[in-house]
Image: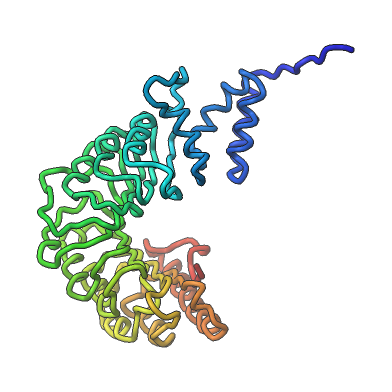
Length: 379
């Protein structure tokens, strides 16, 4: 019997194959793990991809990941510092598979190149902030599921070290009804913020917003009544810098008047997404008399807060498109509103949007957009 001869491939070819395997998100983890088992050469080429964005959907996978990247005291460690390969850490699907101390220790092991962190619901708390503050390459931080109350001044102090952070989702337990640590600076590049939790209508007008903020999302807020949202959005800073605003259906005390207040306070918005059932005739009645027209370009009627019903006439929307909404080129509807009647009426809206786009193009307007971005779409 002749011994089998192993076929040698140049390392450059192996790396190219590994990159191809890593591009298949559905089977990425299993395939990369198999690559690591082929030989030392393949292991060296594939291991960084394997740990770059691990899929930790089960307790077993998480425990194995922790044991290799963050072994306990006295356990032999891998010379490669596997934690340094991690760029995305999403443990949002885990429930009772970790603890506050384990999560904090894990962050300490993966801090070097971590760019995205999505925290779990029950195993991240204030004691994890020191480790979080050392993840200085973070660009996206999602704490929206965190249930344990984290004092906002403590959180903001930790965030001040994350100079590359661009996107932040605050915990649903956030309480802004306490003195803001205004002396503590926000990350300078932070431009997308999801606000959740509780705030006071009396103190929120003086809240110190991130200086580079252009996109704000309101989700899981305890009170978005007319008075509260008016106080929240009354900041001169928001009026100057904010361009995108999303108001989720998952907010309490939201009412049509809350949506009406938005356009009055933030006329410079170019994108607005609101629950579709929170918009009524009064929203368009006001916009029919607005001059000059709003800067708004994209308007979305997203998932409803209560009922999957549109409470305005299509004629009112079309009239507003000729007045205060004349800069709008795209309108989105949640799929839940897609009845046969709705689709027929939306064809008329679509025609108006394309007509306006053609007029802007003929006039050489600076607001002219690509044809593919014009019209009605469904989400």
